[in-house]
Image (cartoon, rainbow, N blue to C red; front, side):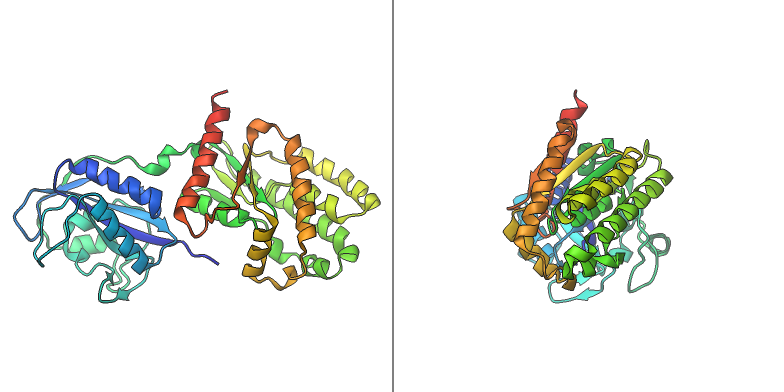
Length: 382
């Protein structure tokens, strides 16, 4: 199970157009390294430890799949691309962009190349003031103090002045125009991972299927003929209950809800697993529930080829999924295809993720977000 690392970075610039350099750095971080969730205000402060031009400083919070040492390497490469020259002495120097890792999750890291939390952060107002703009509940994992406590104890008397704000990349996506986004796909397509990631990055309310609690699921994979009907009925009841109870609690005019399923999924699977008479009875019950269900603003379907689906299923290692055959996945894919044809096409987006790994590759994740963004714009302009 992937953990998206939550990282706080401090950025500074004191050469050229300082605001432009910081914006370029934030944009590049967002596109290639991690999703930029929050940015502080920009603060102007005198140079620290040497005589030079004043700095513009910010702190940002990102979500990234990169581990700490890999992140450090990527940050150094980004600094070079943005014009920072390699240091030839231990002395401080003016720079177009400087990027430091302040916090990495709540970890304490001590290596030759990296120390986290940043060992000087508690002494520097140009870090603590922008850090206090960010909304998170961490405390320093070594000193066990909040940002407010660190700032109150800081003896740095440098002048610091608010110099405005940067453009936050996440505000450039149209996802905030949605109230209810449903993400679906075949078994092993990554729909739950994507739903979790979007919910985390856009501060949405995640609505995730409770398949792990279904007692019929492992029995079904061992004996499909016997357990198909009770499995499908139990899933239908649970999905209907979860959608209506949870969505009923949210203000769908103000809240953004992301689900990793849509209730029609029940019929998609039932058409594959049930015999004719069972399917007819199931359809009668389903139609009553479906009429009362909240419909998503946008339905996203993740297409993945069968070979990759099988690899993903094997990789996650659920014992009861060990008997899944490619032919079963092909039938599910066909059933989804027929359903998608029946939906209003302006509210359906099919994304081919066969050659994408949006879980481990941040660039692929950004590409998926852009696909969703452009689809929303297309039906918003109608």
